Length: 241
Image (cartoon, rainbow, N blue to C red; front, side):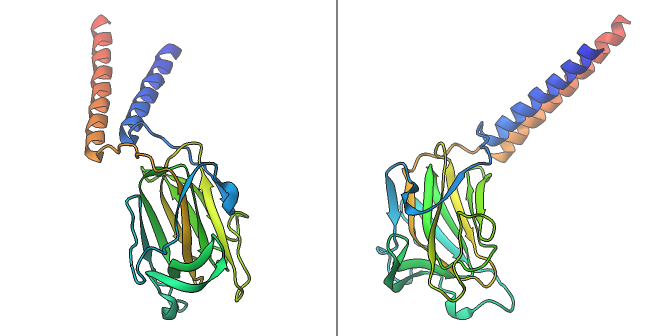
């Protein structure tokens, strides 16, 4: 009796494992990355995008490796239309060298999306003047799994400056291997952010993402196979008895 129960659960666990591999392409990323604060945390050679090469007013800067987008969600009663700059703009001076200087991107109560054409191991960028709790930066893998997030007011790696002051910070993530495919920076209501000096290590090819329909067909086939296998065993037992 106990052996039958163990074997039954073994079969179900094996089926679950196969289905998981099919639907994730064999890559199940652990929800863990190491956030850091500061320019000196990269262990490998990096590429830096400082937005200086883009024409002022470029709304969605892009290179062969990465594209940028800034969406401005509605925060009724607090959004300031005077700072809704969605494109590359010029600060006109150096606030903090290597962090926020001259041309930058965004500047507003924004959701920033930084999408890589592949995956990277380490990432960081300068963030202009976070003042309030609730700003969050999130790293995702190529399958849409969240790897890590840091939040102002919660995590020391994402500090804030005094309201009305002059402050910027450099925030990033590092991984054991390259699997960061997308970064999102969500500003807290009423907090005006911009980004500059986007820094990342060598781009590697992203893992293949299986088509959902293909995965579901395989999963359905396996479930059907298990069902008929159990039915045949039951029939065989009834014939022997």
